[in-house]
Image 1 (tube, rainbow, N blue to C red):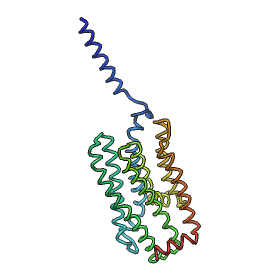
Image 2 (image 1 turned 45 degrees about the horizontal axis):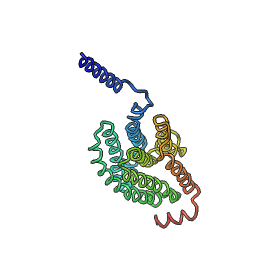
Image 3 (image 1 turned 180 degrees about the vertical axis):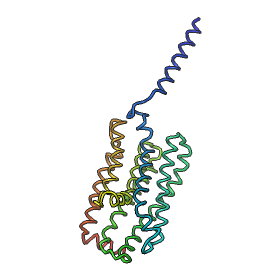
Image 4 (image 1 turned 90 degrees about the horizontal axis):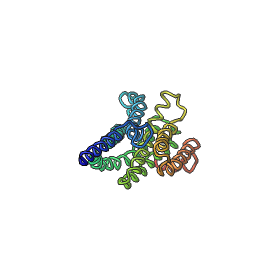
Length: 261
């Protein structure tokens, strides 16, 4: 008889644990929908921004241009689109708990990032030269600060993400931060197409990162160190880049003339 009672008690305890595991969680609590799906959802948002932004100009500037752009622009578009697809895939693997494949593909992503950095800088220089000497837009000298800063933020973020790959809370936020830095050009096209071209591309990137901050506040009750330290530095850098582009100080123009010719 005591054995029967122990068996019943054990069964009831197991049933209680199972019910606790499967009961619906609130939207913002740990392991709730916001916690589990945020970074995967943000990877899809990044893809939507890229499609919505470059979809407005790809036909005129790539497929049917009045003046054909340098071919490196095609390579740049393919490789950087590959990065967005890589981020979506990696986020999906984490969501499906396929961590082994996620880690294996991570090294392919590191190689892709190593290609993207020099490719991004080379494309920036070649395209600004194209705009100045072929399209006759001499004011574009100072604009070189924008893509250079974006690639700097991406490089530092991804390098730290690789170094801290065994610390998931740091790794995923740094991957998110670096990917957001790549979206400035896409947000600029969204701004021109839908908002009248008010120079709000930085605001779009900042808003995505701010959503990461809000997610931390709602789920964890505190803001992670990646956002607390990196976001103020990033915003300060944005203000400095705006100054370089709008004011075009003589020392910066000397540098860009030396680079661009």
